[in-house]
Amino acid sequence: MSDTSLTVRPLDLGDDATAAAVHRIGRAAYTVEVELIGFDGIPALRESLAELRVQPLNWLGAVSAAGEVAGFLAWKAQDAPQAEDGRGAVSIDRLCVDPAWFRRGIGSLLLRHLLREVDPGRAVEVTTGAANAPAVTLYERLGFVRGADFSPVPGLVMASFTRR
Image (cartoon, rainbow, N blue to C red; front, side):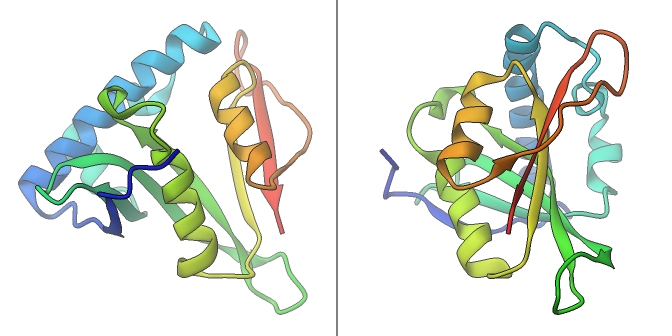
């Protein structure tokens, strides 16, 4: 079930209030993920506001009519061609929902917007903690195919997904 009072729009992290909201939401969402996956070394959890603001990412937000950011998705286009048309895949760097907005379809809203509006037809890749059942379910429900799991560091198993 999605919250229809939200709109998806690009976020400008040059705006202090927007950047602060994204930073707060990211920390809150990753704190929940730590509990789900049993690993507290998520790099974005320790990222400063200044470090967040300089990430070379495109930012989308699910924003209420009052201007409250309920969640965000950050992505970038890869340079290496992955498709027959010579375009690289879109790589999702992070998808975070404010815990106060959990279970209201915010993640689905953001992903569907990326898939349909940002660059339709382009392959999309994402990884998440393999034990993050809500994220795994979301990606599979939206047609992502699970690839190989991998362990970038001891104690963490990541699941990879692609949607073509």
